[in-house]
Structures are given as C-alpha cells and as structure tokens.
Length: 272
Image 1 (tube, one colour):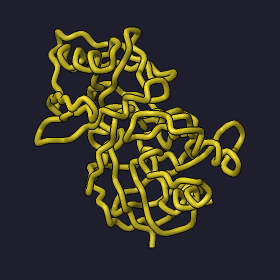
Image 2: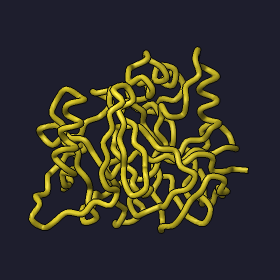
Image 3: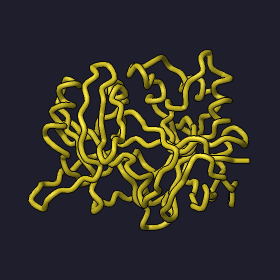
C-alpha cells in the first residue's frame, strides 16, 4: 500500500521547513508554501546555495502569525500569515531564476531584522494572489498552471524507499530534510515515483511532470546551516545521472483544491 507519510511546507523559500499532519492544496502549491522570499538589493532571490546559513532560520505557524526564529542567535520575529497591502504600496519586481514576479515587501522592520542577522542587506517579500507565476509551458498540464516562489513546480514528492536506498549507499545516513519535499510516502519501490504520470492522494489528483534535478543544497546540513561534504550528490551522480542532471524525487502539478493528510492512500492511475 502506498501511503502519504509526511507533509512539508517551506513558507519562506530557502529557510527551514514545517512538518504538518494535514495541509490545504491550492492552485499554486500547499497553502503558505514559499509565498515569502528573501531578496538582495537587486531583487534577486536568496538561496542556501550561496548562503547555507539561511537554514538556521526556522519558521513556525502560531495562530494567525508566521514566527521566524534564528536557531543560533535565538532571536525571533513574527508577522501575519494573511498579508494585505494597500494600492498605494509599491510592488517590487523580484527575480527567481528566469522569472520576474511582482511582490510586496512585508515590512521594513522585518527586512532589517533579517539583514542584521545575516550581515548583509536583505528584504522579505510576499507573493500576492494577483501575481501569477506560470509553470514552464513544456511541463504544464494546463495553461492555467501556476507556481509560488519554489524553483519550478508547485509540489515535490519523494518516496521513503528512495531515501532508504540512497542511505544504504552512504557512509552516514541523511534525513529527508536534505531534499526539501512537500510529500513523502511509504510503500513501493525506490525511485518509482519518477514513473508516475497521474495519481491521487486521498481525493485529489496530481500529475508527475518532471523528475527533480538536484543541486548543492542537498549537501547542506539543515541543522547546522553548513555544507557537510560532497554527498549525497557525489553518490547520487554515480547511479542517478540522466543527461546533465542528478535526479531524486518527482516534481508535481495538482488538479483542484482541497485537503491532504498524513495517512491518505496514494493510488497510481497512469505510470510509464
């Protein structure tokens, strides 16, 4: 039996994740997932790829607020989950890879807090409902498919069997948080999720559109905020390289909105 075993969101792109028992699926990913983003002075997104210390910022949902704690400095800041902005406020053009997206700065006080702890200028921005970032046309299921601030797709799925197989090849086992999935499932064979084209989680339908090419972020210890060596990329590259990409996990697009919960059954409708 295939069963949803973990649900994760990452409210601020490249900061820590939040593990949930249930989550709302929206038209651009899980609710609150990567709707916030740290940018530099040029409006370009900040990432653990260049700043592994971003992993030290841990988000937490407390009531109607998003609370961020720096796990070393033990300083916190919080702001409303439901963001509202007046027409007088200026939108900012921010860049995530090749995409330009309009966003609002959350609050200059919040931006100053991040800048002080990081030691360089940073601003925290939010993607409003009216900003529609299209999924790459080649992999979209419909023309209406949109995304949040995640790298390219609304959801990422990884099988526990895939991580177990990888860990059997490593000197030291790694936790699932190295790979920043939204969904983890138990049952099935290692890497079989990459063959899923259409399936359901509970009552909702999802489409597997592209195996996930992995980057240096997988080498960052999410607890320490530091690079831990060349693995898992080095090991994965020996048996999971296709073209120029090292693959681990499956990118998804959803169909419809609703609730998913840990324990939901996964049913494969189409695979290749």
